Length: 404
Image (cartoon, rainbow, N blue to C red; front, side, top):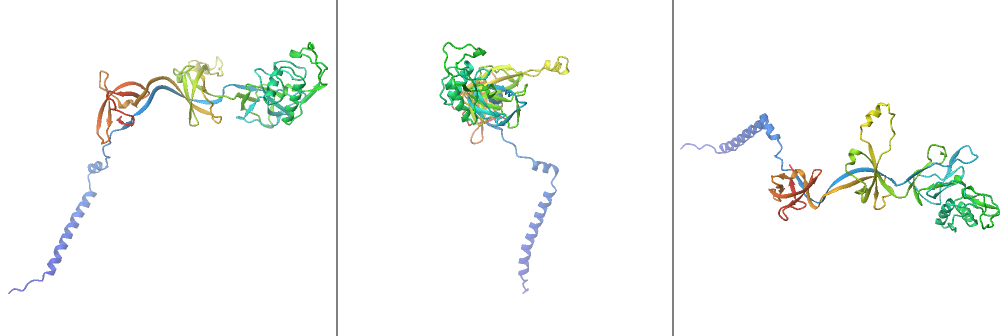
């Protein structure tokens, strides 16, 4: 009987052989991955095929609009040059600086020049004389109206009597100054226009009376005004040829300056929307006028160049409600024509013309499939189209349409 071979060694050889085969195969795959062809590398680098480019259907009004940027400021601006102070060499601001953007009212202290107050009083004309006892006229009445508005007991009758003198005295004192005074006659005289003839019914007057020097009065454009350009302490004023102050009306408007080409078909009376500080306010376009510019000399080279260039125009948009006082610039949208109201709006690229007035959109469904939707085109403006589906509820706001 032949002796049997031991089994332990053969049982160990089989697992080792399997392991070696797996290692060889793995190494082969690794080497194959390292030595791919350039075509294989290019194929692996390619991005997956892109899906359709989509846009969302919106709902609203499609209109022809023009957009501008404008400056916010008072509707009326009045430059003011203070008058020289008699018997002084210069006039300088010595107190009460006036900052741009501040508000002032008729009868209020504006500033101080050479130690004396300067008051703002609302009148449609400039003051033209000192106003004091015995004076009569529209300037006296304007002063009285300003005093009465500040609760001083005076009747605006255009005649400067003892009552007005007392109100002026208190007005100056409440502002921190003494009123100027001058000698008067025993009878009130009609001095409107500089006349010296006594009135028909003389009335007693004090021997001295408070008056308002012309240098201490400034006409302001409205009962309340906004300071566009103010003055600072130490600033020299009352110099001929330049304004010391610029006062504006309290109401704010938007002023737009554009070229004729940019203006388009905008006309006076068009409706507009003013966008400022996150709010939108309705308004109306005012008169459109040529923008004032310096004219070059006729013989200069720039004159020939500018002769054929489009000129600029200016228009003002008056808001329906007050603009924020802090605003300096605003966006203005002028609606020239409403193309469609209460309509579905899509990009123009989403609409395909199938001829004979037939148009379709392609919409993506929730499962990703694409479906054609027949529509009627209502109008288009600046890359957007208002459409109406031929079948009810076939297209709604929020649907996604294919644009590319």
